[in-house]
Length: 121
Image (cartoon, rainbow, N blue to C red; front, side, top):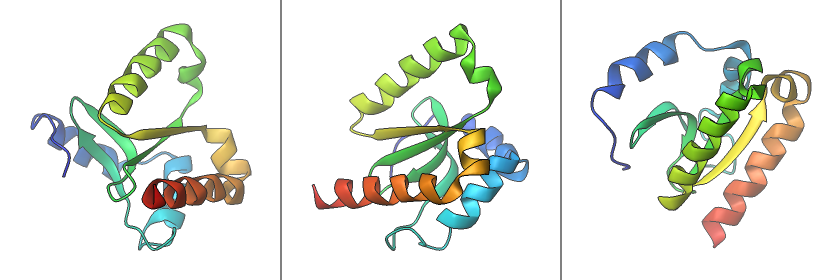
């Protein structure tokens, strides 16, 4: 299990109770070990962050980005966050809301292949 800042737990629980439409749709496809038979968590605290989805066995983080992530300040934060997670040995996949809402099957396929690759490595 990944270490995390305990103060994030309450916020992660709130985020689980108020998912975006894109998060809700993707969760329907990730839950119950539907992707390659591996479990995912949602709104999982890891270190100083809360990640949207996490597969511990594959050390894979999946982030769903809203429109605000197009802004430069958010991109800089995302880059720093991704780098910190990668330094922990995690792979980070990012998709925007539109990708999830308009082409969910393709998003799930990318996640599937990333899980398979990470688990076999």
